[in-house]
Image (cartoon, rainbow, N blue to C red; front, side, top):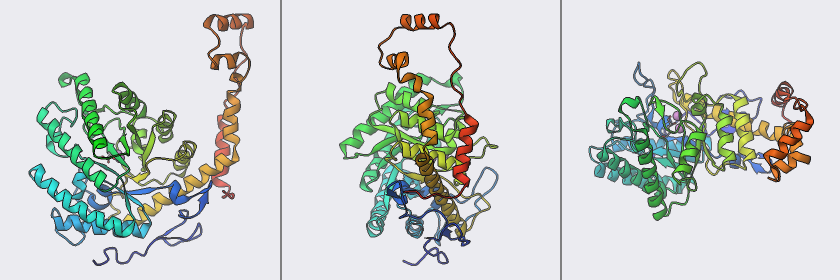
Length: 444
Ligand code: XLS
Ligand code: NI
Ligand code: NI
């Protein structure tokens, strides 16, 4: 098999002063941070769909990039060329994982039996490549939103026949995920939502989504899938209202239907901001509920109200993300670049520059988050902020050893409490800036 990305060397770490566009400035796989090499903190993944399939088509124009890899698109030869390209790409960057939808791998046929045959063939080929390179599968999923049959959703569709079709796709995608040793299986509710309540039975639709997920868990466990199922929340797009609005909503849904033991969250930065939250907020909500599973690493544009899926460049956000991840003890999943190059960035070099940007951004985020934790000022401030609950009546509240009447009596005797201590937001922000911009101090 001949080299596809001919003029691209394997990408090395050259350090912060390098001006080589095809080198890492901050991502140094073996550098130890808080006792673990960077590559273990940051299990990066390539999204098959963006990197090997999407070629720049948007609502107003056709492809700008050539992702035929020298073959005719829509053929099995093309599907194989994408595998070759993908593995060469990941090897050159030191990316350890990939994520896929069923339809990213092969052209969909007119009937599912034929599509499934193609999927069997391509995954045999992928497996060979995995064995030869050591590259692994992070998670798999089924695309149940592109085909017109899913116009009203998959689990939430009004058509029982379409529901069967969704079930068949989930079953096959689970088979493939297990075959490829995937760590997780994702449900992103592509069209699980609605446009108008004038035609929608919301309760019925949500119950049906839960039914589909329950069957997926039962089937997955029966074929030996031991990994996590994930919900990937998103508030809108393509539907006006998506049922998995944000982490809090999705966690409530999972608990309501008894799915919370098998599922965790896959948090996408751009989805969190579309929901009106920060990325860090949805990570924290997931973490405090024991459900921080995996991350779709990208970023949105605050001036645009849709999922722009940009490669992460915002070091501040990446730092806050890594602060959450470190505090949570790491991810069970990884960091999937659910990101695409901008439409005018259509060359092969751009594909590599994009991953270098994303990996360097997260490496910086990791370094800086570790420094914030080692510095300790933020953590000790928060600790101190709640110290009134460590003794006296505060302690009794925490221990559940008081009553509303006793508390009311204390308040009445007090007359009026002193103001709570200052939140010191500006002071804390200046600490973060100091750590971000005063140069890298040694991290263990
Ligand atoms: C779309 C989602 C999608 C999921 C996988 O907005 O991010 O790409 O990650 O179906
Ligand atoms: Ni995503
Ligand atoms: Ni997305």
